[in-house]
Image (cartoon, rainbow, N blue to C red; front, top):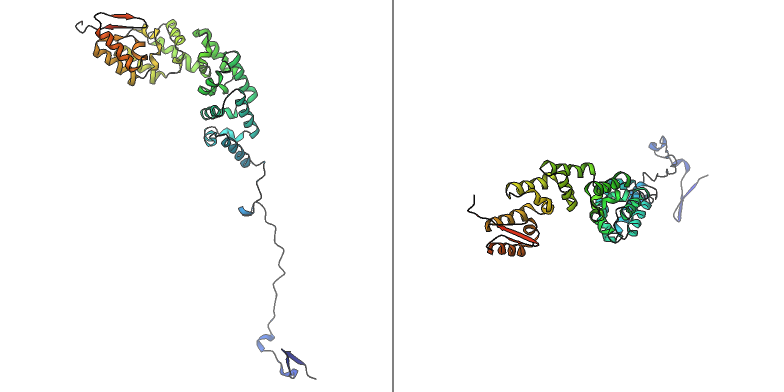
Length: 325
């Protein structure tokens, strides 16, 4: 009996014995690969960036991003704040918002807040209940800074908000009141952030070393409290040396007019002193330094045209006699 192999629509038959496979296939075995295992789920940490799920809201990076975006939304330079004061990383967004709300509550405008935080980003991490609020209360109740003037004071010296009342602000207030004798400290409230030991006392000692009595030194600081802010090496010393050596003036003039140290040595003191020397007159320190250029020249001309020393309130001048040695 013969088997039939069908191809397409035609059929033909061959004897079974005539169909013999090639010799090469007789010993060949066909093996199939093992059944593939199901794919292992990819861990979120190992997946590509495009397949990452959104970061959890509790991650440090996400929280930092939120804080920076919050500051940027207010027009605050978040990069400057972060680089100047890295502790912002450890603060919470809710704390930042509370501090901003507090700054608004003491009548600081958004422009004020931007300036204050640029000058002193430490405020953003200063404890609200133990430092910020007590500092403002102290300024209003003990230093007698008015509510209207408070923003002005903080714009000039925002570091006041970061100072402890017990350790810094109150001791400085007592020193200015009792030792120096300043009755209305609110007029120089910016000084309250300074250290008595490292700022005030060294300057008091300096003026005593150069010839002022302790009483006269106190008078000078009482009349011009900003004198406490000037550098001894860069301001006080060179101006005092010029006053004594080149100008040849008496110390009592500085006692009466300590504001002398507030004027530029190169741009105001030296040029005007030289003009006085050229004209042969000696103007009082206030007239020589406080007047605008045109008024200064007018006063100089008045002294030059007079035949004798002129003394008139609020200025006086004396003519030099170049023939006297």
